[in-house]
Amino acid sequence: MSGALPATELAIETTGLTKRFGHQTAVDGIDLAVPHGSVFGFLGPNGSGKTTTIRVMLGLAAATSGYVRVLGQDMPASLRDVLPRVGALIEGPAFYPFLSGTANLQRFDTADRHASSATRRARVNQALDRVGLSHAAGKKVRAYSLGMKQRLGIANALLMPRELLVLDEPTNGLDPQGTREVRSLVRSLAAEGTTVFVSSHLLAEVEQICTHAAVMSAGKLVAQGTVDELRRVGLAHVKVQTPDTEDAGRVLQRLGLAPEPPHSNNDGGSTVRAPLADHTVAPESIVAALVAEGVRVRGFAVESSSLEDRFVALTGEGFDVVQ
Amino acid sequence: MLAALAAVPVLIALAVRLSSRDPGPGQGPPFLDRVSQNGLFIALTGMVVSIPLFLPLTVSVAAGDTIAGEAGHGTLRYLLAAPAGRVRLLAVKYAAAVVFCLAAALSVATAGVLIGSALFDVGPITLLSGDTISVGESLLRLFLVACYVGLSLLGLAAIGLFISTLTEVPVGAMAATAVLAVVSQILDNLPQLEWLHPWLFSHHWLGFADLLRQPISWDSFAANGLLQGGYIVVFCGLAYSRFATKDVLS
Image 1 (spheres, rainbow over the protein chains, first blue to last red):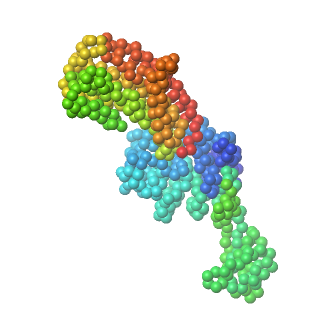
Image 2 (image 1 turned 90 degrees about the vertical axis):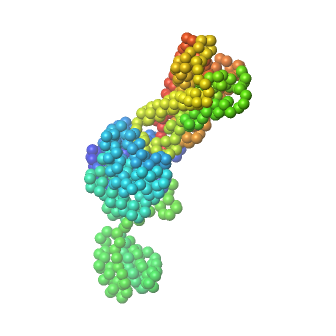
Image 3 (image 1 turned 45 degrees about the vertical axis):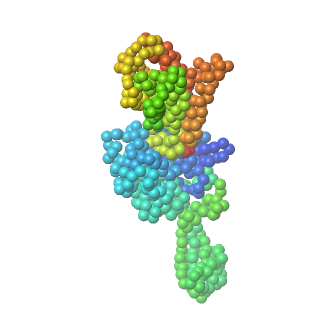
């Protein structure tokens, strides 16, 4: 677990962070450890406390108890020193609809006392260029599509060189091209050494761009570590495609595996799946045993567990997500 | 909003100009009967007409929108994350409201002078004390009256700022502030509550008559300044104590 790293190497660190609203506990004693230079995926179903955590991290809301350190300094005590080094997209973009994209960014930049007014115009143009919005810079934000607003929100986070970027659902409302662009943007920022903290419920997203991840469920942190670590916790499966499902099942059982009930494919055959514990049986010996028993093997694969399996295992299935 | 305010003296001037008979003495709002002899009085009439409702209403809109408007747009969280600094944001917002108060009063006065001089004769003015002053001197007096009226509204603006920190719905803050302005004036008219009157922020609103005497009596100006200053200290303090620790969840 990355929590073992020395504190100085953590971009974000929370200790027993708790936030209550009346009787409702939105965030319940979480210990986050976001290493410097990582792309950190902050996962959790809607309403699991991700955005509240981000608000407390950025000093917008006060923690009920617990501590937050961002870039090595206590929040919210060192808010003035920390926030200029942090770019943020918080719970979706928000702008003045009656101003143009450029005017909006200039206004937010003016709010930051550390931002030099001499370089403002150049920095705003650069940020707009980076998210591909230069062509719509002069348009009123009222006329922007959801995806354009989202990009403008990301541009706002990039107005200054940042050490840490906090992006809450950055690909919300973006089309596939936009999503790809955000992915490559995050990668290029990470390559420059920026720590990126991405909250999302899109697991494929996180799996593709993140080095580390944490999973929230009902206000609690239920898992944290590198993405590989998280994935490894889940079991791999063997998948046998065959018309002889009963024989295949028997063979797998003899080898000490626990096959799941088969389900039929479109091509007339069926698939038998069985969880494969680490290194108990070599996959090739499974195939050999199947063939020796006369099972017609049409396909065979070992699937490592995806982050999605892990996520669902941790947070619940379908609409039964723990609230 | 400034344009709407400027329309008040214009409307009055047009009404007086286009109607066939002059208003008799004591008819209509104060100074109306003097308008056809001296256009400068349009500015004073406009001011007196605007003070009870129109000016406080626009100030309520401007002050009620300060923080709640940002919260309503969702931009408050980005301003604070920039970081704008909570105290700095409050200070800038109140400063903008102060500028609006002065601009509102000045735009009524300016529009009154312009339309008055365009439609009527302009000449020396006879003051309440009986002395006559030149046109230049009367413009200066008008400017002083506008400053007095602008100053009168600062307390209301501070109340609006405080209410604005309580909500994320700007219209709610605006309406609440406007209601308070009306309630204060009603209370100021109830003789049974005489002990309360000196403490009401609207108590000196129409008290600019002292500026129309020779020599100028500054007593009411000072009393008004003191009262408004008190309201500013109390309500900006309340706004600060509320906003400095508020969870911004919009």
